[in-house]
Image (tube, rainbow, N blue to C red; front, side, top):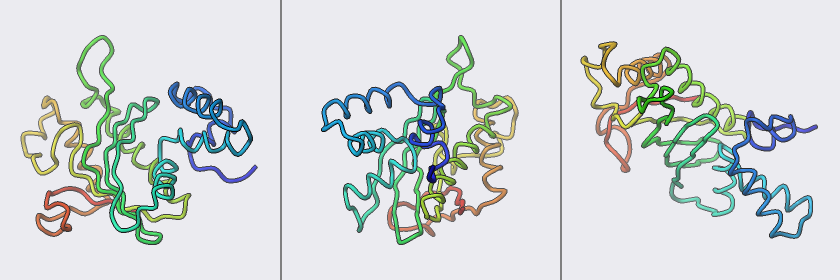
Length: 204
């Protein structure tokens, strides 16, 4: 059967988890296949182009052959309602992911209120990060995430007022506390030449 990354597109197809495949991915596969030679290899290429996780990042790297500078783009996942903008820098088996924006567009039904303070927000967000990490590990990389902004909130701006359960960004505060439980703070000016912002560092 072969080995597939956790929840990548090929794995979802092989394991018949069609409900987890995004509509635009299906359209992209069909359009690419229809425009190609309509061979099995073309079909696999169309799947690779429609990936929306670690496979997309590594495929993009190999296609573009960037070796001396990070690559950067959004991963937008409508199944998990995740928006993830980061710079990816590969150094052998080590992968450095600098996360500039990470949020979810999920809102409380019939409102425009984000689910940030829902009881399951922290597990939901942390689970997505773990999913990405597992995918990179399955591809043979050791990822380290450095996160600076969650739900439009810079982590360096979090303060005691965010401890209040009624604060609209209290969930972000709780998520950061969870991340701190198994990570290290990034000290101002002790990062690299790309940024001097404070954040959280998580190595897998």
